[in-house]
Image (cartoon, rainbow, N blue to C red):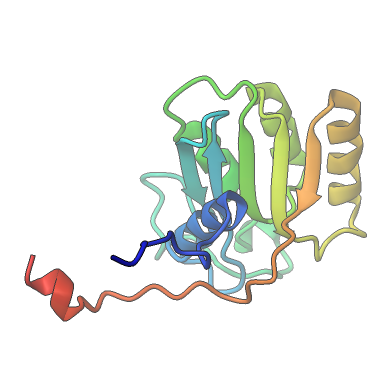
Amino acid sequence: MQKTTKRTDYISWDEYFMGIALLSAQRSKDPNTQVGAAIVDQRNKIVGIGYNGFPIGCSDDLLPWAREAEDINQTKYPYVVHAEVNAILNSTKDLYGARMYVALFPCNECAKLIIQSGIKEVIYLSDKYKDSSSVKAAKKMFDMAGVKYRRLNTKLKKIVLSFEVSEEQESL
């Protein structure tokens, strides 16, 4: 009888939770920037999830999605709730000591909420705004408050999901 061994090509916890954050981002209706976030407790249980979008009850069809306009109220910025904020608001328990996985490094406004919520580590995928005042302020506050942050280190380029059911699964 041949011994069966476990798979060796499974994804890491970090890749799994970042994948959840990226899948959540696909719910965003923002035509330019889709960001998702997942919050995980110390036992690797997902305790919050969110994506960027307008507040509940505010129509996606009546508010602007523009990035630039002469009047800031004709842009998305005064209205959009960031993924990190939605993940915190959607959380199911105390977030002290939790980790947040997020597609884009948090802005200073999100950093304040992350710190106040008790999250102790932020794992991000992109830091494309690292030279902005907002991200510099976020990093300064994280450093002062002892919130660790790190870029996800992975060799994966993508995770593919499929709704196709195999013949083996179909027969179950």
